Length: 104
Length: 98
Image (cartoon, rainbow over all chains, first blue to last red; front, side):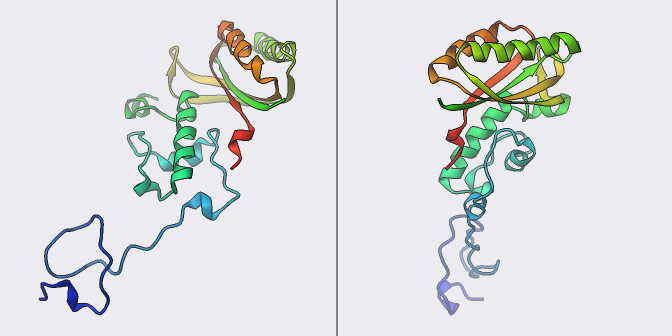
């Protein structure tokens, strides 16, 4: 068992999160694949507060807006997404809390 | 004149006739404010994600219009006086591009 990272041919990119064990190098393949924001990739996709079915993908099961690390969106689209979700909540298209989900 | 769109939710127990009258009144309010209604779209009866005024359903309407920006506040004021409208949202349309 190597307890140094220098044993691999390629110096691993520093991980920001994940298991922080000392030795053994990385365990899960290479660096995480670079994700491109879904709305940047497909210019035809619009973030629309009226499309609750589409926004649903970006909230957690507790009704919270997912973080960028979960959505994989760029800053600009994450911002417009969060506005859209808030509008949809106002119109009762999306829940504010999980309590709404159970009774709703 | 900027483009706006508005969604409003009518309480579900309203009968057909006063409902049509309400939608009519809404269009009239907009034209009285020098606005131009370009489209009215009814989404029909939808389940609400959470109860509003003890109702679990609502009648959704989408109105697209051109309206002077100064008229938005007065429009919102008169919507607030319509008791059968449970919720509304007026949004400027061209902001959605980009």
